[in-house]
Image (cartoon, rainbow, N blue to C red; front, side):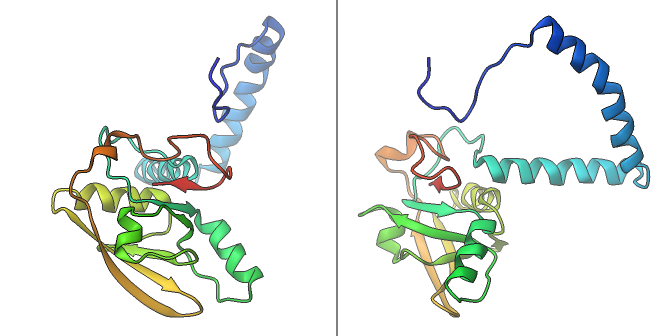
Length: 185
């Protein structure tokens, strides 16, 4: 049995299956009623956006090899709440909670408390956007990251993405997370 409890495999009993069969038609009818104002193209676009949102909440990517950057990041909603609680302006981005010593992020000067707001030409509004920027930048071997440090100081730095021995680890939370809402890159 895995010790990682982020996913659980369940089986429905006969009573559970019967309940599911009974409530599913009403659920589908409600979905159709709520989405009635959207045409097929708009529904497809909404589906794509919801998939992006889901992945950003899960913090995963499908890349088989991925450069390990070294920070532990909080998602945008946690970043905004943390900055608000500290009396700082709300900033949409990923808050740097930790930086592994000698990591790519550490060598580039990324600091705990920085808020990553851009990577190359993409806004970092979710971990998925950062994964996308990294995936695109791998070919070039460098990633330019834009951050807010403190109240409003803008910082731009470049991370070296050339291959390293530890890049074979999967992205996201490769080990049990220290906080349920953070992502280790």
